[in-house]
Structure formats: C-alpha cells, structure tokens
Length: 261
Image 1: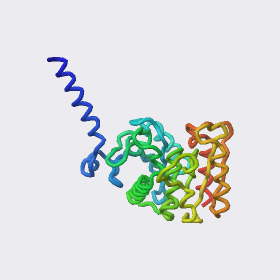
Image 2: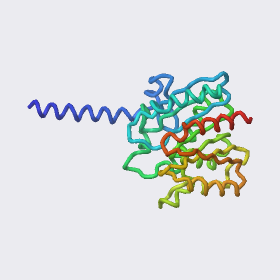
Image 3: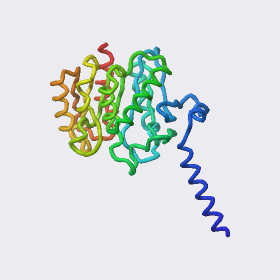
Image 4: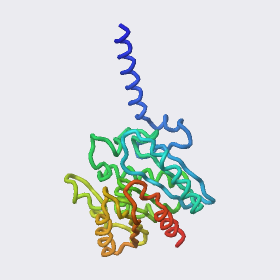
C-alpha cells in the first residue's frame, strides 16, 4: 500500500513540474518584474538598467539541455555588457529554460523537435519577444547578441523583420541550415534580400570551434558582403564554441560597434 501511495505521489509531483511550464498570461503577470508574456510564452529574463533605456541590448542563448538555468550563465554576461556600454542589457531564457514556459514551444535542446531555431514560427515568436521587450523598456533601438542557435534565429529574424533590430552580433551561428538539414526550415540565406542594409552585422567565429566550424561563418560572410550587408567579420583566436560570445575579443568588438554610432 505504501509503495502504491509513493508511486502515485511521485507521478503527481512529476505532473506538477510539467504543468509548471504551462503558464498563461495572468499567471505570468503574477510572477514578478523578471517575467514577460510574449508570443504566447511566459519568458523569464534578467535586466540591468543603463543610464538611458532608449537603446537596449538583448542577449539570446543557444541550445542547452532541457531545463538548464541559462540565466545563471547569461545574467553575468548581461551585467558585463551593461557596465561596458551603460546601456540597458537584458538576458532572456528561451522557452524551456530557467523559469520560462513551454506553452507553444519545446526547449531548443528538446529531442522531440530538431532544428527548432530554424522553424519559421519559432523565429517569429522571437520577434514578438523582442518587440515586447522594446515596448516594455521604451526603446527605439535594439542590439541583439546571439550565440549558436540564438545567432541562427536572430540572423533569420533580420530578414523577416527588417526594421526590428539595428545591430546584431552573431557568435558561432549557422546561416544556411539547408547545408546540414532537410525539411521546411528557414535561415538567413533564405531571407537575406529583405535585410535592412543599414543594420550592422558582426559575424564572430572561434578558430577552434568544432560545432560551428570557422568556414561556416567565413564562407557565409562572403555572401553577406556580396549582398551589400553592413557586416564585419571577427576571428577569436583559440576560441571554442562555448562562451564564444562572452570572450574578451567579442565583448570588445561588440562594444566598439555600439560606440561607432
């Protein structure tokens, strides 16, 4: 009898933990100032406010194991960028990470859905989230820093929503998903003709990156140049894939990009 009760109790707790990721707008609003409801998802974020909020930086992580507390890793990075630029900097946890919901989307690391960052509906959701943060902080200009899958989705967003983001730093991303996967997928190569030519791009690669190998970025950078994008290429000597966006070389280059305005 006790074993049956224990089994029932454990199943009950598991169901609660799963349901905890299904968060409606009313529930989201009660979670506090570090949550925002956008695109049907309740997203946890950490913001470090600058002297002015009319220009914001949004940091978007890549693929981690389901349930990873990505804010634990990216909040300190957001604080660093805030101190370097005096701009309000926001690290977000995509669906399925930290305290963010999974109302409509699995986590990027889910085994149920492959290449989620290359699904058009996911990229459009990301656009809605950026718009919501822009409205919340009263910003007129957005700088996007994306790593890996976050870089891929952000780059694609530049073609789907050409006027949403003014500056974008892309670390260890992939910009032509069709070279490695089949299906109804989308990446920057598919929408590059729609990109705002005034937007600034910074393509970042690490010389020892084995996940997004250097040639992935360098070869696409040539396409970006040919298409007339306002783009720069940054090599981070000796850098591997993880934390490529947080490297000193990357931080300095992103800061310089913002100071050029």
